[in-house]
Length: 169
Ligand SMILES: CC(C)(COP(=O)(O)OP(=O)(O)OC[C@H]1O[C@@H](n2cnc3c(N)ncnc32)[C@H](O)[C@@H]1OP(=O)(O)O)[C@@H](O)C(=O)NCCC(=O)NCCS
Image (cartoon, rainbow, N blue to C red; front, side, top):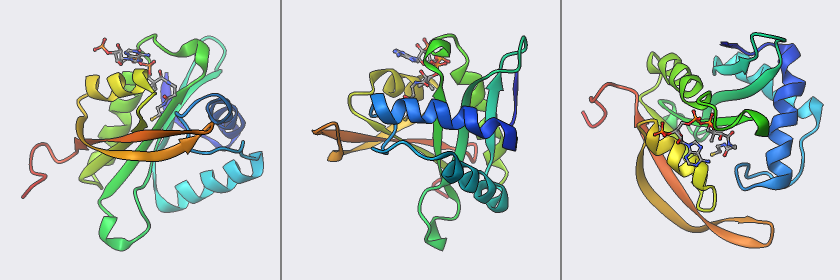
């Protein structure tokens, strides 16, 4: 089941996120975040009217994964562009849950934004395939832009047209 995230979902979101901070280049953070920081972020998302969705188990309500849109950059000229973040607890990956969650998020974003970006490190093969499979177009690669776990990784840029084909006009 997919629904808007609530304040009580924040610890579960944080725990999923911190797993990828510690183990993978799926997160570009290098230090685990505190619960306070994630609560502050959640309230900011609400204030900015940026959607945060969670996929929860119908059986016990457990949060399996999250997806949210965030401003791509703070400058006003980027105001119609958002960046997506999505992550599932390890045991819930590869079960077809990511695609509908991403689809719902992009549907929500269509009314306010024109372009959705996803930035993916070059060693995150699952995620590279995922965004391509969900209709994103790879539009560039930044060489060695990511430094994590003592390695430099390229950063792929994916975009999704939220306008239904009117993006370049
Ligand atoms: C990336 C992620 C959100 C995808 O969600 P998911 O539920 O695992 O993906 P789905 O099962 O819905 O798969 C959708 C498509 O992506 C492809 N895909 C997803 N993970 C894949 C993997 N590890 N390897 C190859 N393809 C993969 C699937 O094959 C499927 O494509 P298809 O229908 O054309 O076969 C999830 O695996 C995840 O949380 N990964 C770790 C965190 C992460 O990398 N987040 C993104 C940071 S940029």
